[in-house]
Length: 260
Length: 344
Image (cartoon, rainbow over all chains, first blue to last red; front, side):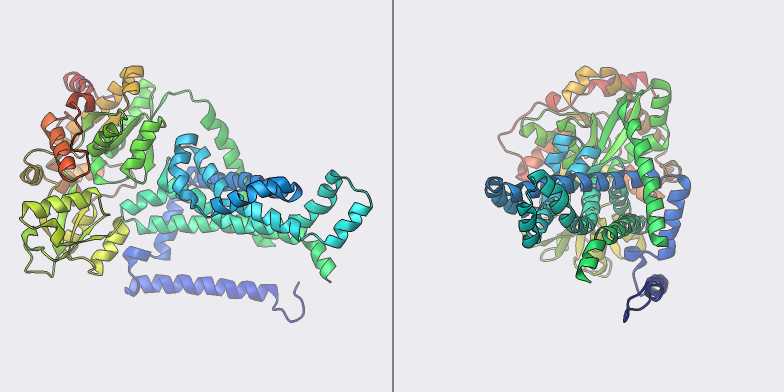
């Protein structure tokens, strides 16, 4: 359903599909004609053939599952942990005073630097990848929670307090619903970061995963394989994002009603 | 709407797959041996990939109830760190990492040599016709992977051996294979010291000429005065004491593979055909590297001392550092494998 002045959704989809198709055709033709170096960018048909081969032989699944698992579990743990700390900081000012400077400082440190240490502590299996993803997205969860709590309507807050709501009731009936839409938006922003973290972790040391495929293929100059790895990551991230976008629309329905 | 359904379906399948994958990693019926490889898919680890391609690891699992898993690392230091940390039982890296580990008080043992020559060569841009030897590189730009790396040291040795002050050239770090290829094609460097398959690819493609080859034993001996071990298999002393039988079986596999490779050194096509799926080294790449291949895995004390001497000379090792060869090398397993001749 489109609002007045907005193009219909089918038209938008058609334009998006046409743009993607044009880019793929341009890439294929460019590489075939030698305008683009096939050694560096490969060709969409070659990339497609590699993916098809991986799917058919069953080679892809353990790698895809490993990356998905590291990204999604890390994303869930990191965001939940970060958000919990964010709520704690907002509700207990003493904790906030202690934690806030540490969070700002730690957020400025590139987490990948710690990855060799994470590998030593958590082993080189799934746990270290989950740990890396969690440390990357936790800050986003933290700052989203802090920002969301600050955004809660002060008037509504005062009214709920006057009505004698307990802290637990306020969390359940006011803070959580009010911050949920923010959290989902934070979650969507973190999806890309989570996949970057998972693949970086696999790239540093792993037995399987899309990062593992990319690392091996790079040393053999197998550009189609590298591109196939990247394309699959995009598909994974897009699938998770589409699902979250749907959740976001669902959970923020009340806000649109309020704005109307 | 349709996209959401697709996304949900796709994610549901993946979640199911994650769910089914989890218990499988829990209880393991077959004992597992993990070998760290850093970096993966480089020609310096040919015996490792050949053992896999010939089905020796599968045989170990089937007949000896021992599962071998390869774990890939971005570089040799990461692989050695994983071995020190206890996450893996063996590693295939360069001897340099064993020596550096000892310097830092970490005890690692080199079990077996893969190559007695360096898997590198120096090339020059094909259109620089006046440059026919490293002696003519004074003032030129020389590509290396990164400053302080093995290719950097190799380049310095080659230049010094040709009476060129290494500080008189400009070293350009070109990074990993894809960026090195880009740098070469854009002529960001005049010469380059690099590894295969890039070297063979550029030479065969006509854009490069070989001016010094360290991949052959002759080229290495001419440069260092003796063989210079590059890659091989190492482990921790506690693995040797805790699991001597497992160690022997792993060493047996590599000695057996080295013999197989040695017997086919004039037939690189046959070697290429038996590589594991996905490894597409051409027979030319394999031929260029076979000269430095160890015959039976034995670790030559002279070759170990050459590595130590040059590490000190390059300032990469404390000049006061000393370590007896038998603290670096555990040669008994190779000896037994040679006498026993046991393939799995």
